[in-house]
Length: 221
Image (cartoon, rainbow, N blue to C red; front, side, top):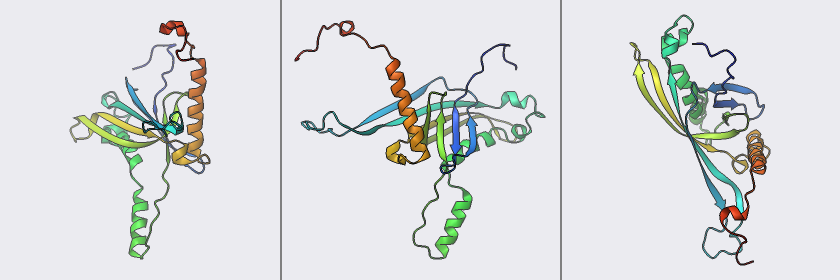
């Protein structure tokens, strides 16, 4: 199906995997269809959480803990109409697309095997290798480092070989801040740009008057 001539190009959300040291793009995973909703939760990191802590009541010790949840749909039906143009989908259905997402939360099998060899050689402590940096991209204005915390796949239809051809994927992500990554880390730099973008947007918002809230002044002044 072709889009209407002259229609604007639709930007898709997705996840980009970067090498945390060189910033080389390892993989770009674009969502087939943009979710209709996205749920974000921010939990402030307050110092004065205890009642009566007067000296710390207005202090924040760091960026909030932000979580993002989306539910994406995947459907191979259209691609299966033209199997010659989509041989991978025709043979495996949605397995490759699902695996691209799922392997984000797996350490590489080569690393697991190498760790096993070191363990057999008597290595007492095996430090995990740093994995790729995951960036959740939702427009040019929202690019943020994340860690996948929840991953649920509901496979809803299958072809004759039991390959999934329609699925819903629920993703839960926690935003990684400079507290998690540090200021020198590539991801920490991306987070700072994300926060600064929020601050710029806040500066563009309309500053309401007290009268709009039904008051003329702040009491107690």
